[in-house]
Length: 532
Image (cartoon, rainbow, N blue to C red):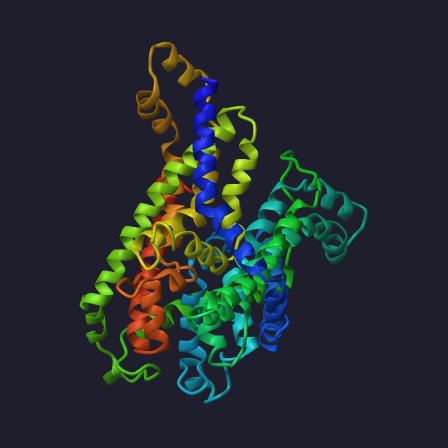
């Protein structure tokens, strides 16, 4: 039994190493081949501008997301705000929408010349093509990281601490400042680190908005260097090492030890908003409309316009949806669906093995294996994609093929499947599989009759958690895509940047419908345990 588990462990280690660790190692190795070239690249004026731009954007987005997410979490857990169920569900929607879709939405709304909002407010009133505009877009995309983390911390924290402070005469603001805020601080720091890294590694929104605003970032500079051709890989690898440093921020913050007193003895005493209740409710409703619903509606409406920005009745048409029947677009949708389904299935198989080794065995190194599997998820997609190009150029030439995209999606998201299945395995009593084993069940029979049925909800959840981001992935795909292949993300990027904004909105609507629909199906199948 131990030898079999050890063999499976070695197979899992080999798979994780080839998928995620070897590519990252090759990127670092390529950058360090010539110390002088590395130093020359990262100290060049262009690299310094890109680094400063990335820092500026990441710090600004993180501060905005932490302030917004923390405020929303406190209002929906510690106050008597009405419609909490509605807000708790709606506020998490941006979590499942790709940031580049959000960028498309806000370009539609706040383009300085033809934006829908500028038609109401006056031309040039809002300008999305700026650092402030990009920070706004990414902040709205990433605040759910903070909101969900801080909300969970508040729900698990012992409410008696706040109640004791109130009984001692402390007012609402004193309790918030001296008790609630310290309880939330570890969650704020950890989730802020995730926002910082996600912002630094974002590609779609910075390229759509930043290029027009003449703003330089590391993620877009890596793409430009690689796309430049001869000699570009060395420059791209050097810049990728610089970007990889940003991924260390959430790892270091997550490693900080802290404790939060928890308890289930009593429900928290809700802060009564009093006269401010109506004002806060109005502000929350306005935020949901402006920050979430109107941008989504703007994408869908633009898909029905002949000319973007013109809302006159005569400009509405269904002709734009004919692009879904064009070969390159229909093939892109089918390719993304097929790749996402294959990636989800492969990730569930490998993630299930990793989860089983960690939860149900005592194999030495099993926790290290889980950490290695999670490393690509914490690594900027641009860096991982460059590494995969280096790995699969020789001797097996998979670059510019559909298979390297499949490998990239599995490498990036296998940790999501492993985490989901691991949670399910943790609830299974070992007595059931042990009884089946005593009865003679072995191998595939034991897997098919005991393990899979018992953990099926977690397997389904893991499958969807990989399927959704894989279907709409852009950051890695734009580097790995071949000349004869397109995905939904790359095709929409090409349309938005070069061809037809209205056609891009049609594809964006398809992505929104499928991603949101998949999330709703996941919540239904898992009875609300998974999904947002």
